[in-house]
Length: 594
Image (cartoon, rainbow, N blue to C red; front, side):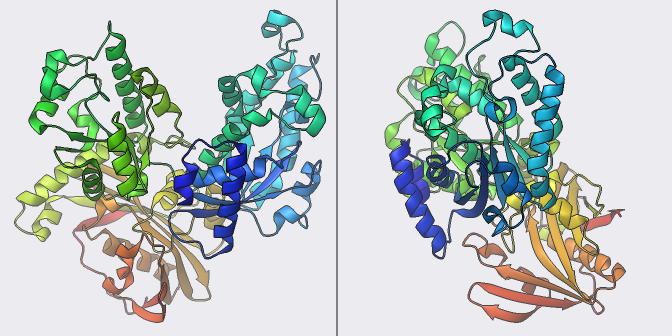
């Protein structure tokens, strides 16, 4: 319910009221769709209005946020002092909410601009270093450029102007500072979207030390919240599209291929063409596309394949549900087909009745509220924030193709005589690495985005992971899988922490795309082999119920572990390393990296 309420466009007063409800939920035994996140807040300005807006807005992106602001004017002191209130409890992340005044004061000009920018970056590094060392996620803001210009239009030609120094600072921030465990909140672009003359209010700065106008607080809080949600793996993964009057203008069943409006030279056709371009952009960065349409399947697919102005081809869709069933039932079927939770889905449909039906039947699905004019559809899709990314990995760009390949595997499965012959015919090979110098970005992403095949649902920042892998005697195992249809990429992540001669399996996640292929048995074989090298005698795993991971409740039992402690929501399991006999698997596991 909190997440549902947060989806409305709320003003600052409504956000404040909603934040109190979120705080009560956090104080209770919070379960369900919201993930906890404790945020420290450092600012050179007043934060009283921002804190409740952040808490309420974070619920929109699946996060139950609590915020600990540092005392006013104590930014550096609070960062450097481990006894300061923002350090207890240890935060999951810190938002460094500093605007241009914190780094450049009231300067309009500086004769040594490069030195000034270096000084500003050194000042920032002093603030964030203690948090990076502690494994705390750091959220940094780009600086909005004030609209006033010392030389007027000529400011752009001089590196010594305040505007030029701020832009140089922002460029260095994105290029040199943002990285593992350090994330960018793009306030420069947000302020430009809002309008610089409206974003900045000198009067409110002088009266109350507000870094931007009070009216901008909801937009600011939303921009920060969506990045926190992305770090916690709460960004959406699937865009479900209607066809008629969404991907094209008109009704294909009535108007035919030549009658629908799509393409250049027609304002309605161009608007729908832009929607397709926006959806294609999302697919190219790893978002899955699907169709839910009340139509005849053959007629609709013929239009997709044959209309000369279609940007999206049939192969761009990971799954389709084109029939006369209700949209909610279709989305549920798509979720099963893709092995993803409903909270991964965004639904886009021009029909308000269809949107209302999906909202009522499937509250976990995010439904875009479209205006009447299709000319706004593409802008809304690009700016909704539901697909926020903190990075763009090569595996992200390959994800849509991997799901298409998965559909081909399912076709082969139907043609196989039995499951054993099907698995053998896949010609699978797995590779494992526990190299501390490996790239851990995808590893972190996989853990934070996995909800169903996730034994503990613990979340980590990339800084947490890097700190973990560099700790002696720990094991962080990356698992990749290939088969005859292509490279599945990294499909499993395991983290083990030592205690004398026991390895505690703190995290074990796996992509649902590879369920039913005996991958978990191959992983356990590799895990035991690593345990023997490390002279570990016992592997101990735990299942912690999250409400979304019931599919792995008996995971350890199926692999031969024995239960040692049990409660309704948590069970601990053990297996003896010395007596373990490798499980038979239809996977080659001979590619191993130290």
